[in-house]
Image (cartoon, rainbow, N blue to C red):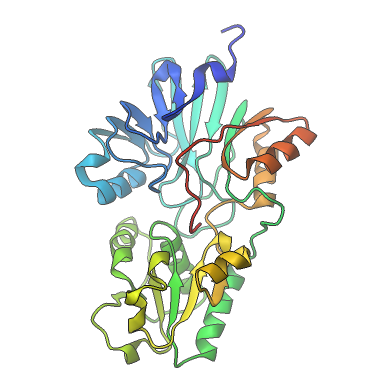
Length: 337
């Protein structure tokens, strides 16, 4: 179609990114008739949509969270499988963010746009790795798009946790971790570091851990923290949602060492604000080097940035001859990542 520009068929609206020829919204912030959802986090997967296209794992997460409100009609699309919606071909490829997370590949009139959703580039034992796709426009997140954000090795962060457990055998270690993705990944990393004893869970984490186990992600022995004596937790590791680190729930633990697994633990002020004694810099988002490397790998001459620290990435891209602009989509959260 001569003269067609990418922004003519993928548009920014108050409900989110809208693929006009397919009448398809990507991660809409309000209920729509037809949506494709990149992953199960609540700022991307909202209830009440009519028809929802997503990976089987993301649909399972949405059903676990929203029940019948997850979608009036759901269509599972496995990685690499394509579906035609009018004149648009839609395909999902791994994003490496959490279980079931996907990039959305849209092809129309000889053009290809890839919407990344949230993604990371390092190994995650709980989900397939990010798959770069060459495209004409790459729509990327920018949660940690500042040069100060260079995430350390995950294994080193877990080693710090286990060293602290050995140093303070009389204390519990309470690890704050977001319920979808971060908790399960942290558990797997602890297992890979050699910890084979039971891990204790806040009740709010149990359901999604069970879902991961149902998708063949081995998390080892997990036990509820409720109903136990304080002395039972000495020398043990307990995982809880970040909001529970300083509430009444945590008082059941003996003099806990409070830790938190998040990319934001790079910012010391955030750790202090949350009362975190042992910050663990473990992120489910790409850091600065990974974001810039990804732009080089996909080779898109044009980049749109959906949310995060847009200005620095726009500047970096412009210096390298890549057309870049910030979309500044509303409704995206970056806490606890």
